[in-house]
Length: 228
Image 1 (tube, rainbow, N blue to C red):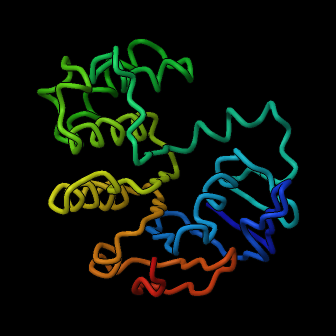
Image 2 (image 1 turned 90 degrees about the vertical axis):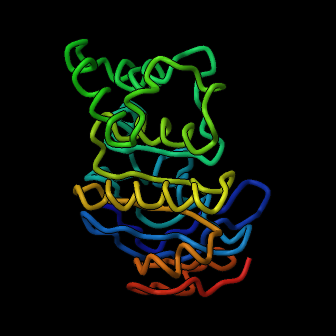
């Protein structure tokens, strides 16, 4: 699903976001990406999403060659990727249902498919009864659940979560992580960038540790080896 081959990302100001990174994520894996601030986590995710291009090396995502992709192909790449952010990024003037359906409208899904798939996504995250309320009427955990429903409604092959529990209390954080695990068990490949050491250690998934742009550890069912 994802492969980096000797990838380096050097920004225009000389900062190295990633250096000589080589790794592969297979279909159906659940991988934590960890490391201190400035270690390269955000750069790695941006390369997967083609928000940045590698300076050197090769990146493959979902059958696409990121390093030499034509701009016209980018929307097709992103249709296969679901993304969840720390700050939710919900549309405040749209209901829960409309926030989720908007993700399908962007990819020009048929209205009948929207009517069928949005309730399924909301049911999966436990928000069927909140479909007609607005984001400001929800708790932080509920808003993150909406963001999750929006990310999975188009049945992505890969789900990327960037610090999905960063603004949540510990109990709610675990609820979100259990949802991500459930989504993974249904066949979606999941990458989670996080600082939450306890969650990483307890969930016993694969851990990809970054330090100063280098991959310092790649451990199956490992622990968080870097300190923030």
